[in-house]
Image (cartoon, rainbow, N blue to C red; front, side, top):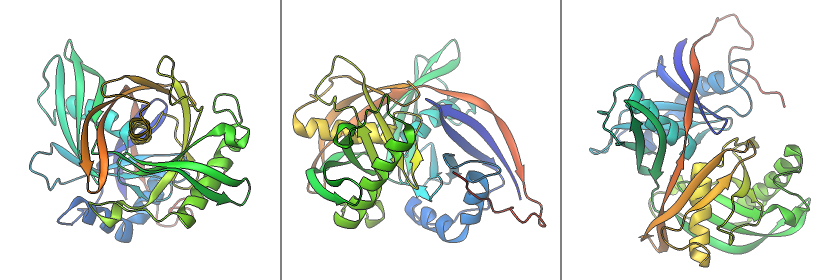
Length: 332
């Protein structure tokens, strides 16, 4: 194995973009490609995401051939557990990467990049100043509130009331003070444990549905918030715990999208009313609902999320056949 990557981060959350070395990924649709890598190439995900080449919170991108005519590029997302359907922090990085690599023609003051994700086509807009791409924003696929104040029973904390929102992936959303925690000051481990308990309860007790494809109908994780959904005059802090207790260092692009969809459904966020979201690293994403639409039976909105990504390096990863740990491992 010899796989090359470009390394980036958005708000501290890694984006490991595969640039060569992956075998061809067949499939008529991007969701079919996602199923293929899950069933046939998962050893490569483990090698790139797990130690010693990665870590428990590594995140990666696999470019694939698009099946939508309007797409400039198409990607699969991977993490410590498997393959996501949407990743906003990666889309922000991919927008800048696409301009830098000449995958789209650069145009000032803003370059449009159409990125096909497993959840659908996402449009990124990358600012270009003096020929250099910088901050990016993207408009989401239709996002919606799936459930409001659904009570689930957790083994560690008893009954917990959660909202469930879809922003390209499904998230349970709950204020951290239900657990006596503060997302700005509590230990990350305590926040992770609480979020994981909620994720396990929702997965066991709340059947999810997505009108477009059953492959989209799974809970990706839980977002603990500071409860500041109705306070537009200050950043609202949150921590997103997804996949196998993986902690997002960024505010989480698809998670912010889901939060905005829930806020809009509750009447807490009007169209084009900007909000700011803060992550555990202090990174900020701005967001606003752009337009109202529908997703099957659900009233929905599209959401614009903005942030900035940076390069951290390039890498060449190899494997020696006799290495007993060649397929990776995780220690927490």
